[in-house]
Length: 548
Image (cartoon, rainbow, N blue to C red; front, side, top):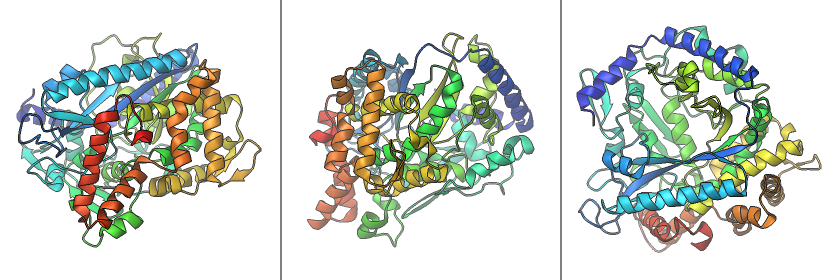
């Protein structure tokens, strides 16, 4: 484990990297990637799926006062415990992340994905239980650590050798470097062409602020902004409120990535509306003029989107976290990543023999290419090289079955919509953006636009979801799933439509019940969170929200 001085030294090393040189290397690497695209290096014989699954840790009350029974307060995960679990660290000390092994998109491949998640998660839960903690799959945590306020936990920082270090942040240098590097102005290479600048013009809910007034190397204030919330911090630590699931879809032929990508933008809003799971923040964070009734009436269904956009966009000149534009070519995707604004020009480690070390700076820069749907080009070897789409809007879900349902639906739609040349591709980008932010605000109650198979624009939610889930099932069947198996994967999402219930609406209903029984708002939110975690304790591995 590194000391605070070691961390400060690594952050300073990152800050010393020349931004213009870093940008020039990324642009040069982009040419290498485009040449590899032309050579077919990113082509494969079939579609492949993968998954990223984020968790946070809470006390389960077994061994210590910090983990007292039934409290389910946030807990920090010891680094040695992450190693034992085989999980990876994320932004906050309370976070843990699992990544599955890529599998062919087929009945067996999806089964392998689900089995791997279950097996590794069950083992991780056992490991965590020995320390008096539990891993939670959720969108936003609401109960801070015992003896600490949420505000203190998210904003506490110290200065070490002139470097600002967040007390509760993982020791990855790039996370802390964001707190010590204002928006970087390195000239035209960083802003892209005029068309790329227009990417912000119709992005709907732009919640970030410009960070351009801050000189490089000096801390800038981060502002978390969401309905009812304004929280300032010296670091990006407030982003650690959120956790997500991220299905990956690796296209068989890299040249087809743009059409898959553009379809992914059209389904982003409808799928997010089914997955919303973060209607509440830690109660103490709400502004004084936001009482319980206002939170229920005006609060967003998916605050995770607001957190990620506002926290990270407040550190940059451009809004790096945003809903992207359509793509025309795979090469255009490469250019967008290379020309994206550099937040921190990190040093590039050399010495391995990975295939994608030939474009190591480009790959590193991609790590801060934050779009709600984003293209990826990488591979440890030429045979493993892939062009894929990461679908990033959906928060953590109540159970594994609910989570894999989104992976299956996304993959099925990525198969079926292009195969059938579904006319929703002609839905305007502006409407796709509107769908996305309507889902953020209103969840399953959002008014969505869709172009049906007959080419007619509709806003009838039942029709939209019937068609989306039917096409998802058809895509799974075309990938080798039986009809019964395809329906099994999608059943948790069909249930949500039939019952008009999402994790967010489940939480809101429980808070409403507690308020009606006379509970204070803070107690209603925290007791609902305890009920959520308690239900998940029984159902995470094998159940679904439908059983709650």
